[in-house]
Image (cartoon, rainbow, N blue to C red; front, side, top):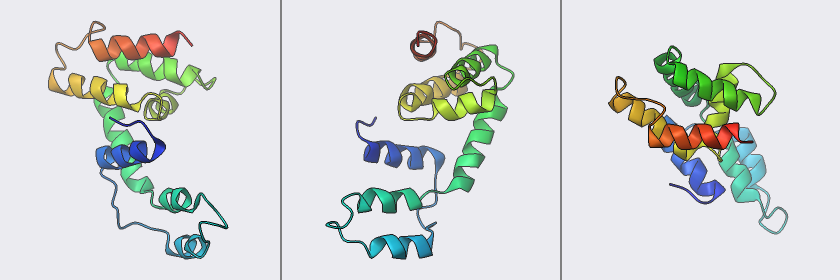
Length: 136
């Protein structure tokens, strides 16, 4: 699915359906004035400004609303939140969308959407993800 930060960001934007036209113009102009010699991370910095937080919020809210009553997802959310010493399931969801977990979480979530009645802890994506999180 992705193997670099740049690829992760592209996949995340596609999943969340971020609006690629949402840029923070002032910040973009200030950063664009830097040359690669002055700041070798200019491309990454520019990429960070191209972040549609409204699309992310909408996506996370939709995922949470669809899964909040499912005990398996609550276990995932609370276990992931625990990695940050939190008990907030929404923090857990945000963690599951991070670089380390998003690929597996996305597959897990889509498995659930395709067959919610058949989704169980034996689902290969769920089993892999919960094991990775809880063994930390």
